Length: 410
Ligand code: 3PG
Image (tube, rainbow, N blue to C red; front, side, top):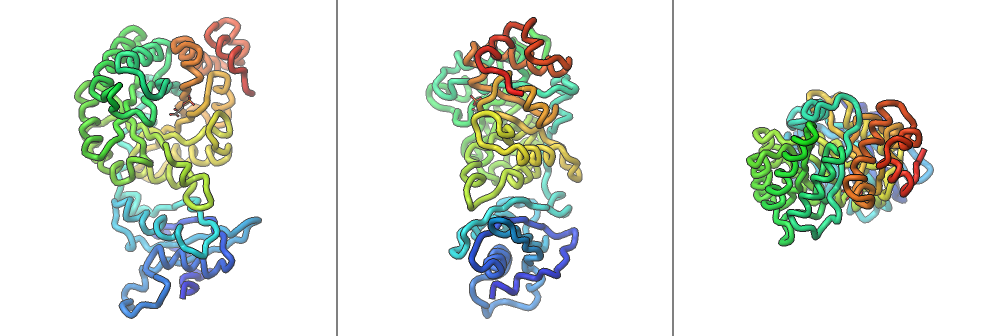
């Protein structure tokens, strides 16, 4: 029954949605057909309710390539199978029930090629790389930022003071951590009141534009209320935990952002529940979905550097996609974050390029926020001036403090 969904001489047309998956099973053809059937119009039995007019909606496995371990398969879906502009609906088909099929030993969604008709049904980012560079008046260098640490527990005034020190030290962006929302010790309202006051002060004192990304993640209506409040209070950016908030919530937030015109900073906390296991999806499809819906910047990985697991080639592929031309969908800033410090900056830039936001939490605040912030900024300045980091640190004491503590990674 499932095998009829496999046709290796089938040539998909350009208007079909294509998925690439890694599959392990004892009967590959049956399992691959099962994935295509269960993600389109089929089930485990021929059913009496099937009509001839709906056959054209069936998905087709058109490629099966054996690999060292398992098989890479490709499935073509007719676009009529999906409701345009409805990401949860699309994912309930192509990344839904299929992961639970008993006969599979592994199933990972590696990539999704969306056809033009579906791409055009989403807005993409309101603000992309060019808009953010224009706002900050930074033409070429990577942006540098920090995450307020300790991640939880600081009261609003102390939180704001840390942000101020970071901006004065030379950082472009300060963000809340992924698990800060509006807890009793730092309510959202007082957080943004105090921190945006410090942002204004830091901008006046440095003559530079700065970004503050407060975490608005909450139930959708509350999240929208918080985003509107940020706009009302003069903020320029919001952060959202896209995986835990969910794609539908992100779509609603993006709709609202049509008017708010805030930078949408996407944190991927929770992604590894999908991306690290035998079942789930890689970071590339997550990045594609997030860009299509409309984030402006997204955490993608640190290319084998730092504290979080993320392969070099995978991070490069994801980042290249985010910056590539994609119909009318604006390019998006990749963010490298997690266990970073000034000594990693040259290696990160050589691997991932200039269109990058480099963030360090522990790598900044362990040195004293202002010193740590300055060391990060000096590291990108050294790259811009094409001066080796160790050489630059001879005349830039904060960078020296960082290199002495953390070392320098070539
Ligand atoms: C993040 O949001 O990416 C992490 O909180 C990074 O923190 P770290 O720089 O201290 O690892």
